[in-house]
Image (cartoon, rainbow over all chains, first blue to last red; front, side, top):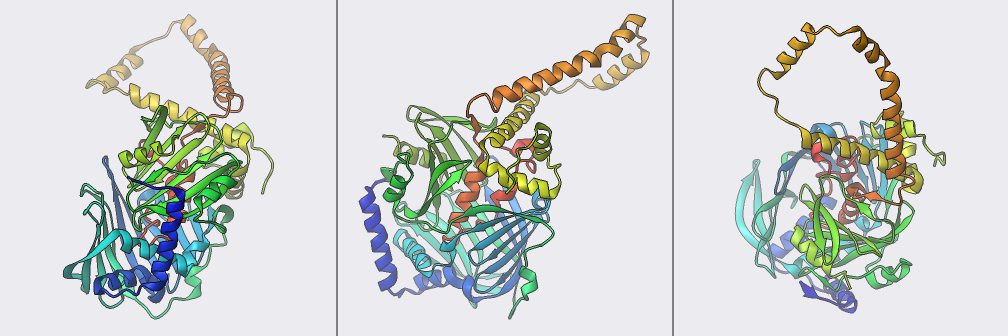
Length: 339
Length: 160
């Protein structure tokens, strides 16, 4: 864990900004990673994707059919598991629609940051800052020539991600994510892919037979964590230390069942963690959550696929951390919020 | 946005996905802004979770032939006149007792038991996934929390 003050975090964000604006990507492998990170904006395709999340207890596999139209329109229709069958996620730019076929409802979300090219460059700069790209040779993946690239964490020297990048389109056809101890966390791969010239508008229509309800909207967000904490009105806290390489990506204040909640997303470019804080009531644990301690306070955690959630109350504020960090990393981060 | 609070029966129907689609969607939205309905809904979920947890804890393997032995005994058994009379009265006692237990649990765990919320992961997973979608190579689509965390689409074993 690296000690940071909020000013240091802001300085890092500023440095990242200048880095993304000024530094051309000269190394061919770095260049390939950059192209891969933005490939979706230039290619239209249809395909079948399988994604598997692993944790200590089990693995969760999801299969979905995907249609993507450049630059930023995507529809995913879920085929498996049974509980998701028929559900659909439609993303049109900043707008997202989660179609729940069983409940006949559509949850609408919005995140303007998805469209912001400056944010995209910042995010890529963060990857460069924290990860070294390493070529692992060429392969054939489902009949397509691919470059295999590993992203190695500069602090731990652990391989965090291995990608198979299509030579012709730079699209990532297979991606494996690893924990610091080398165990695999997830794999997402195309089982089939077909590049096409265009896809009709009709493929990306929001179904009109269901009721639409409002989900999370992230129109106004900020990287300025300290001002966000100040705006909260309940003395939200800023972590005194973050995992190596992590910095604030964006944050906002939202209402969670009428209680103002500060949500800040932190990332090192690949891994992400969110900190939620509110002055609301105590969360009682669900029966299958595992009890734990955060400093002197009782807490609970649970895993969902590769995501871990840790929640506790220090008598003043309710905290929940969510991310693809393990419970030990989350607890370190949690303890840095305790004053 | 519907400002009308749901009845206890409607909350139960919502929990089990039995409301009409339009009503279900409106209640889903209403829950986000109505603390009293949210608390009542949480209490209903808590009762269900507790019952499922208790059932799992007390589940026992039956010895071979146990079920057949019960069926055999039941078919051979002839109740007395007193037993038949008391059995007829049993629903008159059992139904009010069950209703009283449910009401006590509802009011104790829910609206009047203080602001106790469950560690409900769906909101946090949804919000995290929505913000993290802007990070390169992030695959927020793999397991859409909005759907997998949905209160009735999980088996008890998978429900944190």
